[in-house]
Length: 317
Image 1 (cartoon, rainbow, N blue to C red):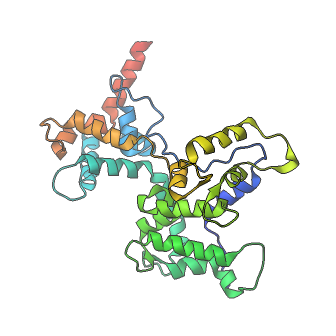
Image 2 (image 1 turned 135 degrees about the horizontal axis):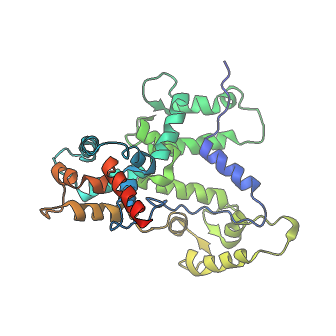
Image 3 (image 1 turned 120 degrees about the horizontal axis):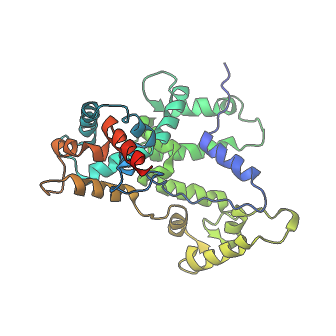
């Protein structure tokens, strides 16, 4: 049976977006963390923001129909998961890691959707050979075929990324490693590969740097030789003033990382500090399960909190 080539969906989607962008539209490679919630953070009114931040918006909604006891019981099980070192305490670092994971649920959902397509022997792992055969099967059967794609180059690039994601170097990915492979921008140890791939995409003269015209050329399609939009002139200024920090006329790896993976305000860290501050009754800087459950309505919703908010809304009328 001949297996169809399945280029990495994320990369393929990016190629499609870039290929179909209108000449005057700006292409954006910068990665920003999404807000923890679409709601306002006002604990004086309700804890909806905290619920969304702690659980993710979709999961937070599932608590609203539970009784307070059911909410506490379910929260207790979550606390056990957050306590990664199982020492009986939830630290700020453990809480931050949990919040970050809750906020990335869509990434794990995407990984789960693709997992069964690549785990061909159903052993709960994906080897490089499995991924290669599913993704590049047709090319491997007929390396001389030419349909416009440089599959040899794409495969080498995927293998390099797979090796970077494969923490123990056994050429086999568990679910966390495969998620890092699919979404490298979300993992600290994968940022180097994101930068490298970005430079390779934009660097047309192959010198390993991004020069001004390559930077502009990646964002702006010069078709029809129309006058440049105002934002292009602004980007030229941005490159000169902020992107090219050492003023050598080009961006190196460090400057490229500052551009595409900026050090944004860490919302997860701020929320973790907030939750600890509000719940830490003995002020030892960490939380017991009892302290969390005593402030359960800060972490999760229930029929009681939902009913209380309904009363407030009724009083407003």
